[in-house]
Figure 1 (tube, one colour):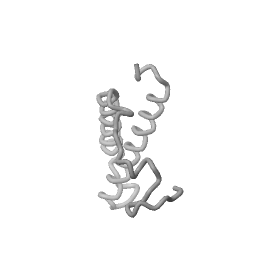
Figure 2: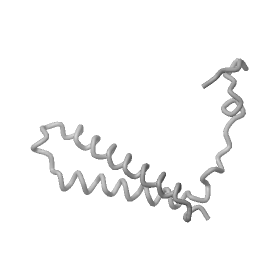
Figure 3: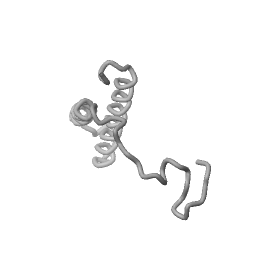
Figure 4: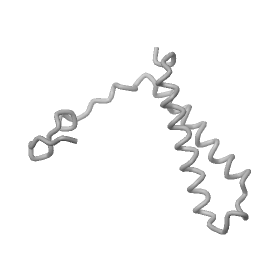
Length: 87
């Protein structure tokens, strides 16, 4: 079961932290009136909610992790013209 794997929780935590940071930066730049005039409680509340939604999304989609199928061109190191390349 994927919930028992430490890598699942590590990836989930990383996603949540990134989402928290992105939300905080978006709110800071939207207000753009000065660092001291920011409503920090509101900012932390909104960013925290975004992080919580990220965790819930990871848990809800846990059964689909690794089930994504990619086009053959993505997996055989060829470009659109069919030429080999090294990523």
